[in-house]
Length: 74
Image (tube, rainbow, N blue to C red):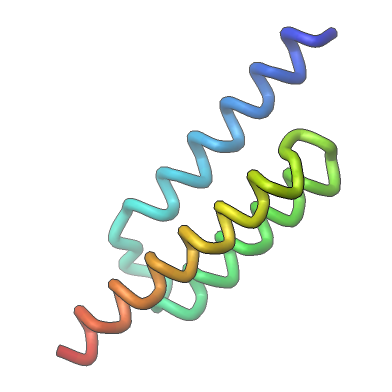
């Protein structure tokens, strides 16, 4: 059971990182930021990540948003 939860956590974090690092043609920076926050919230609600890990993901999402916004706004 523990290994299954660990695997699920790793898979969800990998999906989160993929979303964070991909240039999403279908998502503008605000939509990408919202999706990253939703994914972090879901992982915390499911008990897959700690509150400290959640805070780090939120910070990282903010960094992605500012980098993407800067790139778009030149």
